[in-house]
Length: 235
Image 1: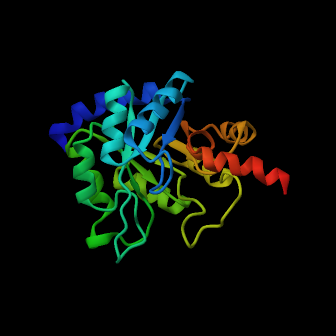
Image 2: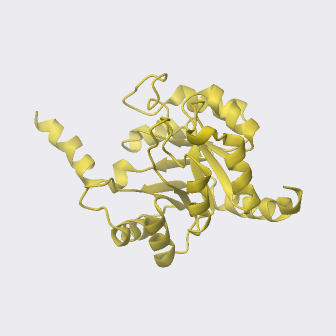
């Protein structure tokens, strides 16, 4: 780690400058959705950047590489993969980390929850691998205890992505403002707000908690889900 400390610090400083107080747009489409295509995701990212986004969050090697080919932007990359012996699916093992290291993304997002990882791997081990290759690590957490654990494990950022999506956290309709506020006040690393930010009203409530940056996906880049929110008004 000591031999790589200089490059990591320099890169982290540049990335922090570019992401602070910015909107990061998550450009992802699930299997079976009409927009599930790397070129479409790259164009979606281009549109988001034209609109003022400061960076892009994307899943899968093909999408990340296409986004990088079309755009000069910071990408937070991840790979979603299910393993039979674990509930962790966001960049769960070193295998996914190694693939992401080849993708060109500057930041690797991974599950930072306290759930057992596949192949008995650890959050510390994955973050160490990421740092050894001069990349930054973002831990997606679901509660405050996990945020502290991720900070101790060496994560460069934490994001509230998984609040409400683990069996032991409360499901909410909107963003988890309590968790966000506590993390911002008590952690020493940057905290990103992510999850169920559905409209500008939600975003203003989130910004009042002063996160380092904000990630929004569904409300911007998933037309079928956006359409559903309007169709519900007819019921």
